Length: 294
Image 1 (tube, rainbow, N blue to C red):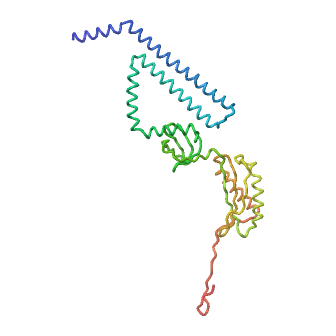
Image 2 (cartoon, rainbow, N blue to C red):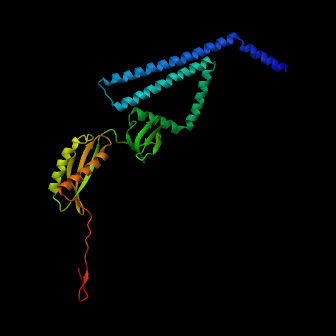
Image 3 (cartoon, one colour):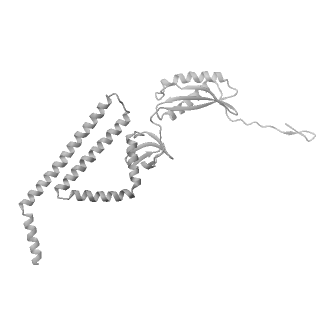
């Protein structure tokens, strides 16, 4: 009982100690000031980075807008992480935590973890080069391995790809060895049109050429007028004509379907027959003498 009373008296004396509360108040003010200054530095730094990127746009050396946006976001994130890390270290010093011992221990732990997390390190390094080299950006349509779709998110460790059927694939960056980006350059739509052997090829070509000359006015996705290359193959029951058209990135499927529909309608209007499977029947009737005839 006496020991409990002694402890309570010491706690009371500590709580009533004016120097203690002054020290706590000074520490809280310093912490608030550090957080405020860190926020101001981050805001000013982001504006400086953004202004630097704008100045680069007026310079003689130009880079793509996609890459500028990616690098801008990356530099702003790095600035934020660095400033907050420094602020965190300063706050630890204010609360009388030995920062040097903490950093030394973290270095030893990090070294041990590094040997067991080689894949993680590889993912981060690969992710950095993906962003730095602008291999692909958010919104691009890419194919890597067995996965294909639109890029939803790019991180230093993982990349998220959404397929056209809705599945979201999350890939470690280190697993991205080979990559095809469909969104950088213009696409090409390839359409094959079949004409029956009985039809007039010259007439079909003339009708298709007239149609193709009209289409760019209706489809802004076409960067150039479609081109009729000519006869591609001679099939069993049809002559195949090939049409190509350069489009803006990832619009070749839409333009290809539109060309097929309009060509079909125009050929029907011109009375040009599109081939269809045919079945020939032979009637074998027996003769009087028992021999069959064709």
